[in-house]
Length: 323
Image (cartoon, rainbow, N blue to C red; front, side, top):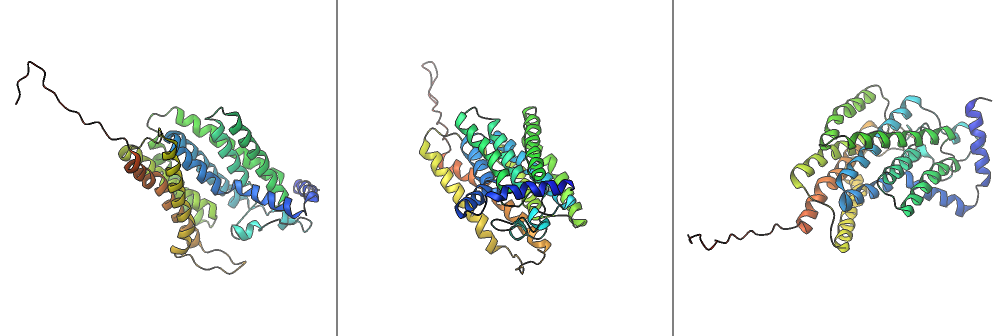
């Protein structure tokens, strides 16, 4: 039995405990924590409510690791367990239907997301409750991918490793840079150049374009915000923070879903290959979302809650003559 054969047996053993509709749905929902939704919520909360530099480190680490995972997927092209063995079932929507026919197993994008999000938060806080939630996220999301039959053990371990290393390296880099707003702009030509080469050799996927679009917007948007808008997110009133979060997230998810119907996506028959332009429009969609998050939302919040400068009233001293 080869290495993949042993890993198939591991997934088969885990799926012996499946079949209960409630438990199956529970792990489907847990798996959603490795989607872009949790990242978007955590990233914008940090950016809008707490600290911009922390958010920028967090976002850069997540998107950089996502690009690495996407590239490795299209280079290695490992089939998923339910595709490799008829003894393994796909619980929930099969990945090749959810993410397109160009969807591969190694490494696990969900596990990478869980690691980069959790470690990125844990690096900046000592709150024990937050730590418990993040550790559970690191454990449960990868396990859910095995339970659902979408990944092998080596897939999730590789995804976790990439996420952790990306956070540690990016955070270390940012801690030694004063003008961090230039980091994204410096990395941008390399990322876009890499995407262009992969497209040229027909090695690309949906997540790669989404990450590239979001990274491009964050690199440009963060520079514009720090140099020109200069909004400080911390507020003295909790209700102001709540208003910012509600308005900001409403627009984010409105764009995330609404742009699907506005941008000219091609209708694709079930089982057919997804055309390249659909991936490009995905990149455009996430670019628009990230521009709103970095520039649009911060500009709006400054108009709503920005502290007004005190008016300086000049008074003549007794020995000064009135003019």
